[in-house]
Image (tube, rainbow, N blue to C red; front, side, top):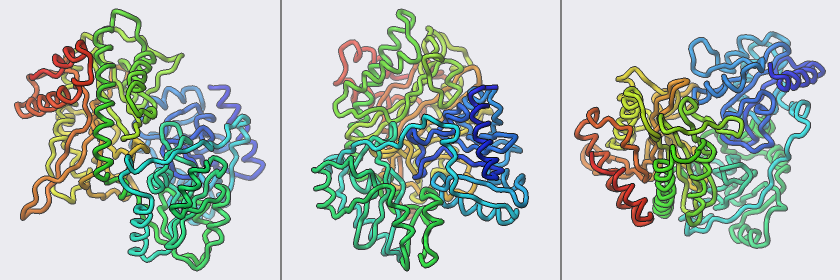
Length: 598
């Protein structure tokens, strides 16, 4: 048993007992429903040792439970070992959801407590209903983190910058006008916006308050006449104040938002219950009319404008150059000089830094060798850092933020000898990737309609992967962005019937993950585009905008159909023509070989 985890659980339980709390609920969330969070909010990691991005913990006086999804099962097993924390594998048979668990176990008169700022409004409403039926008590204003986290880092308040229209393609005034148009159409006069990526997109600002996600910790409240931005005001420069004034954006302190929303009266409010926190919603006056739906900006930012698209393609060219230089180095140096997971990842990051207008990684690089790659979100560390040998697979999932856009690319690289099964599985993943990228479909189709195209080559082998096939990508924002995604299974309680639209960018990343053996993933970004329009409607298709060679050393060409060979050859021809002007003579010669026709 982990002594540090046991000590922290004991401290937390002591405080729970003092306040008659039977269940304490913790989420891996900030006050804005963000996927990735700052150090100030990493309480679950500090308490349990689990570092995955998706986690919910329930602590009682005798037990501790942690829920996470299939991306993190192997990682969670390893990190929770000996901690006394029970892993609850989301989606597995006989594993209840958090809400089902609370409903089944809580007794009349018992108390469930949480910090309502870290619970979204939709979940808060569900917990109120569950506890009411059980005759139990809800205490939604308990932040007990300081009881076991004495050296808790302060909340971030870093400088931000204005994203010029050269890169955003649309002014702040235009964006706010579009949002107000949606508000008027919905019949509301106030919109509370807490999603940090939506705020950054709306205001054309980018910050540094969350690692890898260039956002500012803030709230934005838009009425039909005013626009108020709640943030740490001392980070605003004189030039930025002039910019905000020019765009009629008033600022107020971050901490003032709850008093402001509590004071709203006789207005109609639009908010997204999946991102706005329970504390703010529960504090709204009974006189406030409420309309709950996704933020209008969610779809507006998901459909990239022509400037964003053009810039993003250029970002991918730069990123492709960096990755190809890395792959050339890896292929030519492995076995000749010492290379580890960490040093390989650092070499790739150095190649990205050489590219003009590079801002930083869009997420923590996953550089995973052999069995480590079976953990989808494995992170190498100084005390856990495999040495690469001239055999087996190395999986590298990485990306960058550039002023032009955001990238996310995965390649699985054969470092030397591989088995027949590894080659068979690699080729199946390649076939899956090509099939989805080649899709042609009628407007109105969702990602759920198309996901089977990627899974079929793997299902044929009795294989699957415990995650979606792809996600939307933000424009210098969160690398994971909705509403567009590819997944075959609808998530419980989620409205995911969003049709794919021209201008959306979505990843295509099927994979195979065998515990203790290896992981394989091939990931490209797909730009949705209009195809022909006829009596059947508007057809859509995809353009692959990621440029990096697929490792032909791992492909079983005999397992590919003639069409699949054609698709791979066409892609590799595009990669060579696009990247070769930016490479050295040696790198160009190598790339020519690794993009040869098969």
